[in-house]
Length: 294
Image (tube, rainbow, N blue to C red; front, side, top):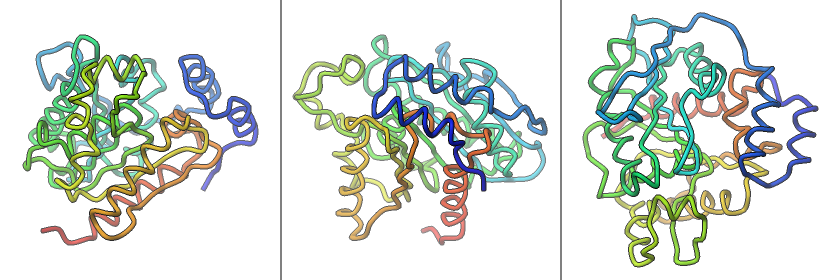
């Protein structure tokens, strides 16, 4: 299994535990030349799952035959930005790599703050899962083997979709979820403009709007992930969520620490030769599929 190249490891260490638009672009520039150009994957872009211009998704599949597991990926973007396919590399790199491993992959855009605040993002994830449940068989996917994967703001929306009774529905629940470096609790001390744009400025509503508050409402198996160079404000929430799930279940949830990576390199590295995160996710999916479900 290939690992992170030394040149990228050194560059990410030099950037350190920071994240902003400049760090995003610098990290994209590091990985862009490494993204595979291999074929063998069918791509269908901009399928609508709702009436809003942002309510569209892309599907990546090795073929339309069969009934393979489905991975629904929710990209980040700080609640106010981000895109499922901002160029020809990212996040198609993720869709293509997992499709080559035998999955059908759905990558979802969602409505953005400040025009659309809480709970719009999570509601869109719910709608995208419903679309997938109904339609993914046309692309070789098995509706009964859906998995949800969110990163950063995408992980926050995914957690709300799993836990929050304002959003969650019993039908279309995934068999498991991967939550990477998300924010799961708002507090009165929160001063991030992006978080305030989505969750609002009324601190009296933060507890109810925080996915962490509602962890007890779901038993969906979780793989929680954080990176060495996540900023503290984007790593501690994963540790807090792990503690809440451990208290709920009486056992430690699966927690994957990614050394040398920063907040976005974890997902930008797919299909570049660094397969560490991808193999961990595939192992998690295989374990969930082999575990009896009620």
